[in-house]
Length: 354
Image 1: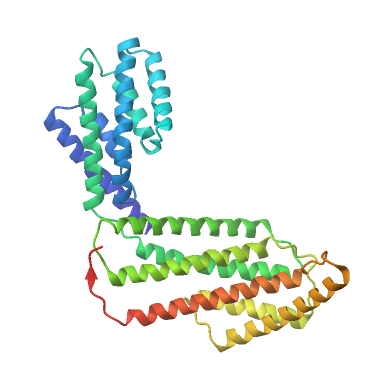
Image 2: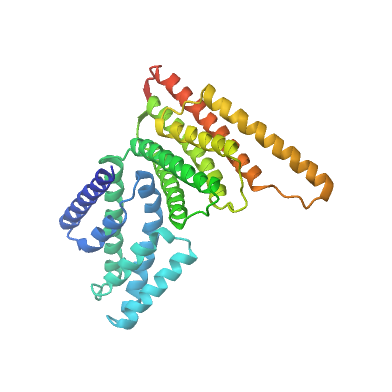
């Protein structure tokens, strides 16, 4: 999927460059500035290209203006290149044209060697070539190989649930054995968080893309359920993170309790690996046993609190139970979402234009 995505973007960049250069050739304009703009402005979605085009055009005008001014004052000298770079970046930052800063700076410094005596004509031609690059790249992004991230999102979410189950299982094994969290596991957990953030970015891309392209209700509904699962995954990662950074050397469990916790973790891991997220009677029994244990711990803590005052703290055992119960509750929500998704798939839904 990554190969296809990268290949599609490269292909679209090639089309944008060719069409831009062809138009400039027919207009007898220098194609270099337009091509630079076309390359830089190919975005992951059509929405981004269109939105940023309205920022990049005035930014490019600023860069071209500074280029003409510096050439008039200093000629083609190192001072001109320095002045254009600094002035363009400063002006774009002040005017909050951040998405256009690179294009503007490139346009400005590249113009210096081509500006001669006809300053106004050079300025207008640069605006024309920049506009050509912006318009062509936006249209190519809009109509040529529009990206669809739905399958990528679904695959990523499934893979991330597998990773979450593995990390949860390994961390709880460490906790039950009184071992500290190894550095490699912390690293893998951080990678999981990064992957979740990337998937959330793809979701925002997909939402933006559907503003400009037709799609089916069935596809939108599938995305809706995938996004709900992703939100559950984010909360799940939060509770796993609490277990990652929980000190383990104070956790002491008898064999029966250790067996119950280990079995509970294996049940959760199996649910995530199955992809069906089935939460049945066995899972309910496990959660009820953990809940009864947690309530006993809570009652003991409140009793201790009444004796020694407000300084009583949650025991590591109670904190582990709380996190696991939270994960079980999230898993049940996940099962409900998946059940609703499967139920709605049975109904035929006509396409519509969004």
